[in-house]
Every structure is written in structure tokens, then in C-alpha cells.
Image: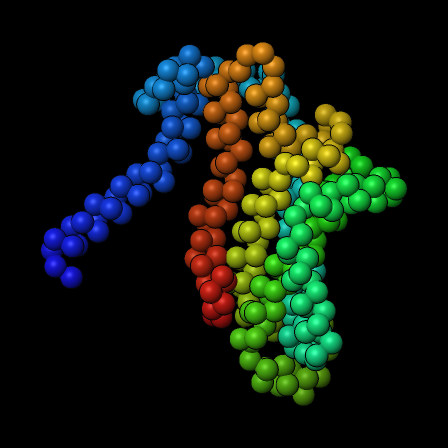
Length: 268
């Protein structure tokens, strides 16, 4: 590649990087400025961060929302990874034509928008008296077609010779899964954990439906509440959005290598 083309490529990439980072920079600046400064489009950090944080704590249940969001996201991530990994492993290792048909039916479910099943799902949850419980939030998402398909694809690269050798050593199928499959598929679990945690943390519509009291508020619900009323404190709103964004950003940065390897189906 010539120096001219290389220079143009670098300029384009720098510009694209700037466009990607600018919303985050604007959010950080907004969190440190007064509401009037945010409205005016001030692009320099201010000195109003502490005041915005005090106002956020005074007006909203920030601590409760953080605890609820972490509880829901962690529980959903653990249960989803366990159920979907076992399902994906079973679909591939114990393969037959019937399982292929069932997998095709599951993949068709991915085409249904959530709003199409939202009302009957809520009626079912209500009939079980699970409204306002973490079970109501976790239950509809513990077995998703995408995650099952992801673990099934990963299981295709899992060496079957290991399974046969483990069976000859006298290990049960459960022991083979937890002692052989799980350690080998660390990158796939990392990718699945990243996707599941981010989806659970950022979920708004379903928690808004099943969590009907203030004790069950989550971070996305808290941020939405900051925009209600006749006047909006945009500095406090930007700080709330920033706090809501940090956990998922940290999770992704810590697991980005596993995420990339897991999505591409790499086995280490």
C-alpha cells in the first residue's frame, strides 16, 4: 500500500474513532456540568459533578437500583449460561435428526419480536404470582435460541476423542461436561457472559412490566424516571446514564479477548 493510501486510511480511522468516542466524552462532560451548560452544548468538563451526584442520590434510589440491577443481571447470567450450555452441548454431542428439527423450531423463535409474546407471558407470570420477583425477570430469558445455537456451534469444535477417552476412564456424562467441556470452552463462556450480562443490565421493557413497585427499580428504570416531570436536570441525567453505562463497559473491556474468541468459535 502506498503512503498516500495509508495516510488516507489513517485519517478515516481517526475520524471514525472520534465519532465513536465523542458520545461518551459528551456524556462525561454533561455529568460534570450544570443542566443549563448541557443544554447550551458545553464540551468542556465542569466542576458540578459532586452536586449532580448529591442531587441524584437525593431524588432517586440509586443504591437500591444498583443492587437490584446487579442481582438480576448476575442471576440471569449464571442460570442462562448453565442452561444454554447444557442444551447446546446436548444438541451437538448427542446428535440425531430429531434434535435438528427441534433446533430449527427454536431458531424460528428468534424471528418473533418480544412484544408479540409480552402479553401472554405477563399473564402467565401473573397467574404464578411471580410479579415483582427476580424470578419473573429471569425466567423468560434463561433459555434463548441464540445462546443455545452459540454453544452448539462451539461444541462442534470440541474434540470427541476427549469424550470417548473420558468415558473409558469411567467418568459420567455430567462429569465429562463440567470437567472437560467447560474448561475448554472458556472463551465461549466469556462471550456468552458478556452478551447475557449486558442484555440483562440494559433491559427496560420487561422489568418495567413485571416490577410494579419502587423496591424493584433497576438502573434503566431509574434513568427513565430522571426524564419524567416538567423540568429535566440534564446534568443529573447525564450522570445517571454514565453510572448505568460503567458496569457493562467494564465487563466488556475485561472480557473483550474472550468475547472475540468466543464469537468466532475459537477453542483454546
